[in-house]
Length: 88
Image 1: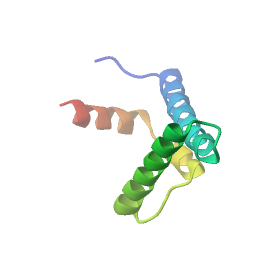
Image 2 (image 1 turned 120 degrees about the vertical axis):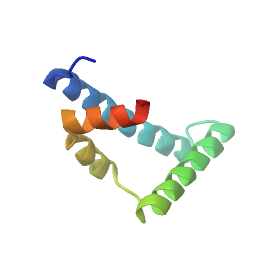
Image 3 (image 1 turned 90 degrees about the horizontal axis):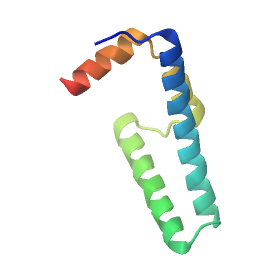
Image 4 (image 1 turned 45 degrees about the vertical axis):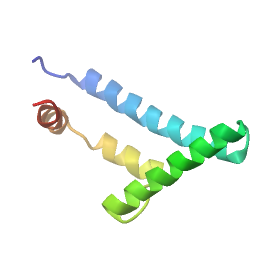
């Protein structure tokens, strides 16, 4: 398995942070009423499930900024070690 260079790691982090922010924004838009009732209910359930998951695992709801800070802190070594554990 080849190594991951700095540019690839930077892109992966940016992609993950972008996905997190977009996911949060799409839920806010749906809950604010700019989507159909079915989409609103679905978004509200996803938000509740996410809140429940975070409270159960961490005891509090992380802000987007906290999540982005944690993503930025990931090094190549930590990322590759995590991937190896996940896929072995």
